[in-house]
Image (cartoon, one colour):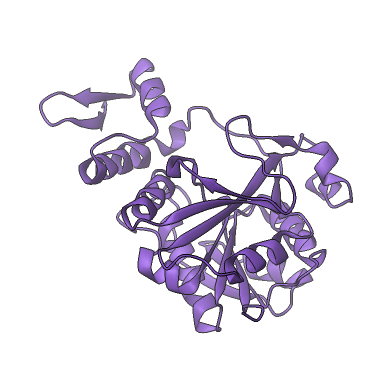
Length: 281
């Protein structure tokens, strides 16, 4: 199979310097993406930032409430724009992620090889960068030496491809999928509104379709440091809402650690009458 037309898709609201970091990383690729699609969620300045380094970037403007960003809908909108442009392989990168130089090439090569007829989703390792004075300090060679691996996810060596037995480890920070498989899986389910569980649902639907999760060496993404809230209380309502949607579909609750933290802080509770979580008023 010839090299497939490949698009990189990212979604963003704010995080302009991190988007610049990702754009810098794409310029270092051994195989440039054919298209770079950036979905601006309620942020009209994203287009100018994306076009600084990538004048031909396709920017999709998506109205959004900054307090409840539509992550599933935004990824779907980005994929739709990429497919309309002719993409055969979709590479999704979180806005905080800088791809290593071979990431696009490795994703495209693995998904261009002979694979099973069932859907295949490829994931690269995500490694975490330390805090710096300014995100521009990440835009230098040697990120691999500065980044730390995630303690509970596979870290395949370069050129290795490992079968992933646990689809619960899928996450959307960095992954790739062929366009027909994306269509077969239905993209991200927009019943998951705002933050939380849309990744886990996507993995479950991959398993339900008898698909395969692959961990791809040489396709790492380096996660730029930013402040985070643990547990993410500002997403309390969407996490509780989405956890209930997921449980009704799959029979178990995702994000159990966060739900337990919310309960410990008297922010949410499990209603024994309904079997659903609810936000305490």
